[in-house]
Length: 187
Image (cartoon, rainbow, N blue to C red; front, side, top):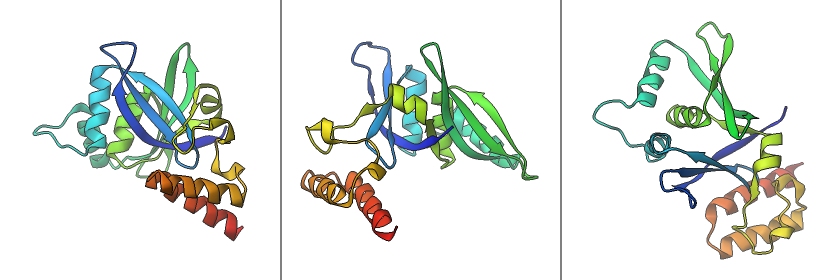
């Protein structure tokens, strides 16, 4: 199964529920986004990690991260790997001090909160992104032109996207596009 690296793009109130939030994950090398509904506590745990805020006493995810490090366990990656009904599921991959690895089932919110604290990559299964991802229209209102993955573009298309990103002052996307241009030029 292929996995797509993602990063936190947004954390916001859910438009349809007063007590829910939406975490938006975005492809590192593309323009698709995966929205995940969260409760208040889960959203707060992720927000604290995104903002790099430290509390006077460790929160649950901070405590767990400290215990992992003290035990010599290393979180290698957090993956959103499947759906069960309407719920996303995640898998954490750990490395033991002896070099062996093991995996642990987790809620995506816990996996992401922990991964953010431990500077660990977060990935989404390609089939999950294909089925539940939405196309970001940050670069152009003509979303039919956006192909989804930067690798799917030709060099002239990437150059046009780069120009649009710079004009819109979307420098995060511009840097991704620039890197894709460099990779394509070097291949």
